[in-house]
Image (cartoon, rainbow, N blue to C red):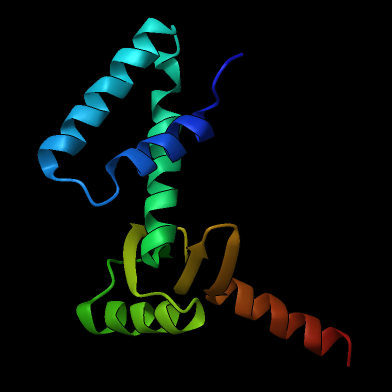
Length: 134
């Protein structure tokens, strides 16, 4: 029976919970050896991605991807962070700002599978739809 990436990730999380850095390093090294032995090293990226999801979930950390035309300035980053923190009841928010010059203005916030589209293009489309249907 093959062990899945999710099972490895969950096991790794359980193995390192409340451990010292030395113990964490040993657990990661042991996992790598097991993956090599079982010829599953190609699962490593999936395992570490899933591990990150478990880690964040257990600690109340939300990662949000913010797409904007320009790099967000500190005040706006703080407002977006506060909004995401309150909306998702997070203890901590990690923002990843992606600059996309194709966006005319506004921002798009992606948290997991949810997208909050505040781009100018989206707002204009909504306005157009309202005007057409009146």
